[in-house]
Amino acid sequence: MNTILRKSVLGIAGLAFTGGVFAGPVAAHAAVETTHAATPVTAAVQQADKLIPHGVQGAQSRIELNDEQSANVKAIIAGTKKAGMDERAAVVSIATALQESKLENLGHLGERNDHDSQGLFQQRPSSGWGTVEQITDPEYSTMAFLKGLKQVDGWQDMPLTKAAQTVQVSAYPDHYAQWEQQAADLVAEHWNK
Image 1 (spheres, rainbow, N blue to C red):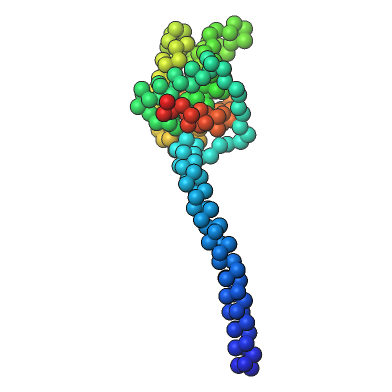
Image 2: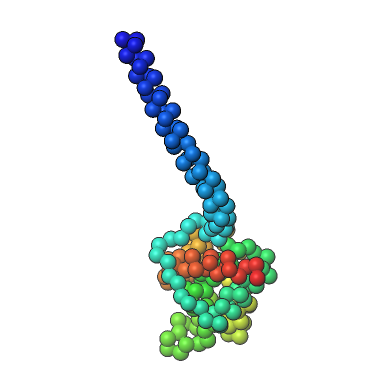
């Protein structure tokens, strides 16, 4: 019986050794490739952790930006820096402006207007956001939005749509989430320019 057990153990050990010899170089080679590939992935993960710390919620929308919209992205980023806030605040701001105006500095739209909402963030003079001239100025409207965001306790730890909704008080609170990936991409592209 001892002989049978000993032969079984030796047989298993032999298979393990043989498998290790053949698999060893393959596994070692794979580890080298993974190590080289991990550097960009780690940087991308760190960037995503900073810009999208909660991951995106739901299906994402994306639009092609024209020169005016791109200029408004840069104005929002400049306003965010001026307010002393970080990249995440810029992501929340840009996603909000994408939802509210598609990053277009909208004036009064007549019958199609939602109350007296205007500008990038569709802020209302009648709600105390500022004068029409002020809220149609991209820097002013960004600073006004960020002032509201700063007053939201724990906004940094909230999903984007909840933080934006707390400031904006929209009839469609979940719609901000669909712009988070494009907003993060825009911040990643323009923050250090």
